[in-house]
Image (cartoon, rainbow, N blue to C red; front, side, top):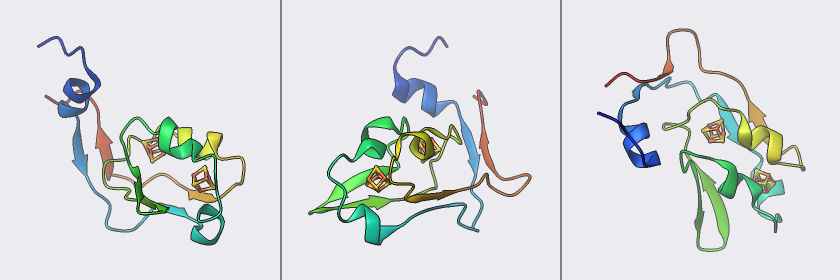
Length: 92
Ligand code: SF4
Ligand code: SF4
């Protein structure tokens, strides 16, 4: 298989999701954010807009750190999952 699209590349990853949340957004800051840089930076689509606010789910996180870098308001508490959990690349 020679994946070309991002969906194909994501499909060959395996996740062992850490039930302990390792990334949190500060909703009091995010609800006032107009830039929504995290929405456009996250390659895994972990950020979405629901009605008029941003929502986040960490389960598909690729651990790239892009959201933490692009958010100029420092509204993301970010750590890696615990050892043994998270993404396993190119598994398929
Ligand atoms: S995480 Fe940062 S960029 Fe994303 S909505 Fe919140 S404040 Fe805005
Ligand atoms: S670390 Fe990367 S994949 Fe995970 S939520 Fe942030 S931008 Fe998305």
